[in-house]
Length: 359
Length: 233
Image (cartoon, each protein chain N blue to C red):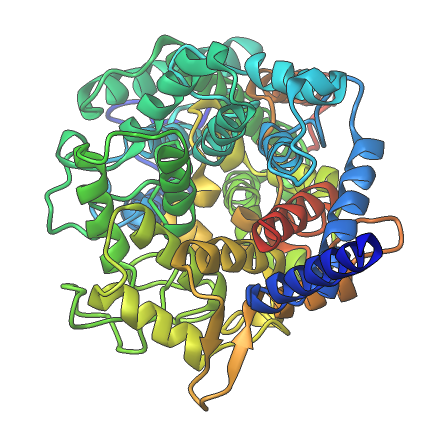
């Protein structure tokens, strides 16, 4: 009788485990295991590349992304795990400026500050609350609006650029928005509403874009009326950046801007390239934005324009596994533009992408 | 002497020289009319204004200030160009220019003018280049100033190291004055659209270091000029 009970219990447990696995439609369990191993290998590679001062590539931006890759990984690293986590944090803190920015250079102050406060927030350490709050204020101050002489009808209105005296663009905007969302900026702050003006004007959607240049495919350009891949064409990395920006700025999933962006993604669904971009430029930026936007959108499958269903987690994992080098790193094999020749940066992006896949 | 005393009639060589200067000055005006709005449509960038005023002042002083080739004239003209620059800055810039930027950009204008005038003085010592010294230096400055523009396609074709990209950027006096004004001109809308540098990892040259290099080059050229006996004309 005892033996029978034990056997039944074992069979029941097995059945339960199988049924749980079978109902977990988010992704293939075998691929999920491989994705986990790939992140471990990527993180091991990053560990080997870490400089004495705790940074990667002596850059606030790359260090922040690598740190985030660790903190958000399935291993849930914390500052208690040792200097490989505490030293990069110290490196970031050593570059905090009086104006709240966190950067080793006057270039890229928006990118650097945005990813730095996102990483500091991911530590969960309340000690950094003030630094994060000052960083938020700095990012908000970069937004171009009436205080900078821009009226609401100007194409730059509501946008955020590199952090100097330059033009805004959607890429900088999306990272600032992601940082403000990650650090729980008040949803009623006017910065969101103004940001939506610029985001909407970067979309090829004449129904919701009040500037005349817009076409109607629903994708996003780099900035109103300009893409580095020709004219103002929509392309993958910016469309996913645009989708994340809309969602993080509080736009509903059923809003026509979100729906038309998703329709562009359906019509151009691929992970073989950064669709719409020249020579696969910005490929890993695309994978990173793809993982984050698909995760935020919350659908396990994407049905493309031909009616074919795609499990984005499976597809992204397979693609990233195929591109990973033996040493655990990733690099863009086709183009070094936008720093994608830097293995530390690209590996951090790939790990963050996989972290979103296996969450 | 390159200037005309009042009441004296100009000889044909002087007339040619005078016409050339004003033609180049007109070209400069046309050029800066087009470069001023390049940071974006109606973009109220004070920093870009500082950069344009800096470069325009150095080039205008090269063309218009009388230069004897002597040390006093060289230093006096360079100081005069910085005074003109500061006057223009205070009358044209709407906001307040931070002290560090004011100091760095003033130094950049001084050293750029000094280098341009030293080079012009050096070329005047040779028969072959004496008459074309001014337009040669002027054009060289324009070519070097626009280096990031015409070297862009080369950078796009070949993979350069970060250091090589930085070196290319540092060759341009425009980068020098931009670094002094702490203005990321390569990521302004027009340059971002027309050169690949904005999408690469790069750093602007240290403006103080570049200032020292310009100063050293100017001193070396001027010393050579003084040591060389002028070619008999």
